Each structure stands twice: as C-alpha cells, then as structure tokens.
Amino acid sequence: MCQQGLLCLTKAPRAMETWSIAGDCRRAIASQLPDLSRIPTPPTFIHEANPNIMYFVLDSAMLEESSSTINLKERRFLCKASGYPSVSYRWLKDGVPLNFEELNDRATSVPGEGTFILSKLRLEDEGIYQCIAENGNGSAYDREIVLRRTCKFYPSGMRKIVCLFVYTLF
Image 1 (cartoon, rainbow, N blue to C red):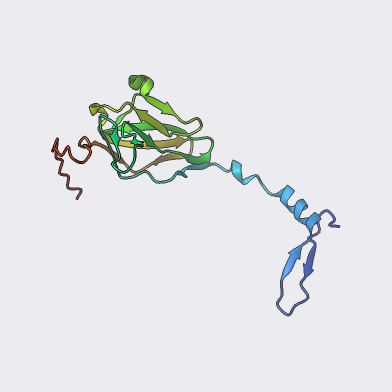
Image 2 (cartoon, rainbow, N blue to C red):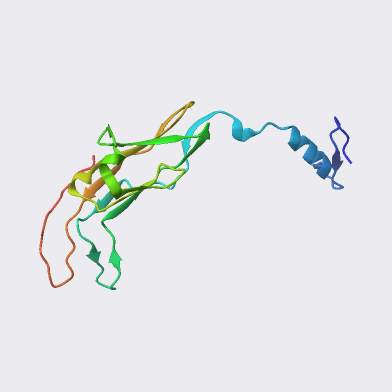
C-alpha cells in the first residue's frame, strides 16, 4: 500500500531495469495531477477533411446501374474543433459572413459542432465556403471548400450536352 508522499516502485526481476508503479500509488499520483482538459487552448480542427471541391446539380440524378438516387441537392460541410474554453463557430461564403437566417429551412446545424447540411441547393449557393472556430485563446481557419454546380445527369440513351465548365486551379 502506498503511503502519502512516498513513490511506490517495484523493480522487474530481469536484467533490464524496468520499474512499475503500484496500483494504489498510481491512483494517488493521478489524483494530484492537474486536469489537463482545463488548460486554455486555442481551437484545433478534429473533423474529417472536407473535399476541396463539392459539386451539386439542381435536380437529383439516377444511377445507371441501380434505381438508387444520388442526392446532389444536399451537401454536408464539416466543421468540428476542440479547445478550452468551448469553441464557437462561424462560416464565410465568398469571404463574407454566411447568414444562416437567409437560408431559412435549407440549413440544418449539427448540435455542438460547426457542421451544417445545406439542402435544396440553388444556383446562388455556388461559392467558396470556410469555417472559422474561435474561443478566447484564438481562432482557427479551416481550408476553403468550393461548391460548384455541375451539369445535369442524363441516363444513357439521352446524351445531351447541357453545360461545360472548364476550371484551372493553379
């Protein structure tokens, strides 16, 4: 049993010098350590990376191989960060703060995160989106996400060019 103020170590019976801390002593040491989750830290993104470019169409498209629908009318913008104190989020669209009230019922936020789902996409939703996570210790800017409209999909047999976009990302 570990006594207050003593470090209880036991030596392994091998030639290599390894030491272990007794269970009671480990609990005593752990109870005296500071709570590291309360150390002030700036935001750090912890979400899976968003794609650089996301595409959408103004209509749903059908896959040729099956009858399942690809929902190209909805896009998820991931944004989640850790930090202390708690992190708040805001989004920019084309460098201007995104007003979620103007999106009405088309934007759904994920509680506790900056992630949102934009549905019923419109032509005016095209643009460059960026998440900013902030707390009293700093700000973190996630990489930009380009949201672009793509041509309407036609099943085979209905070949028709609707639009053609050529982008050079250099």
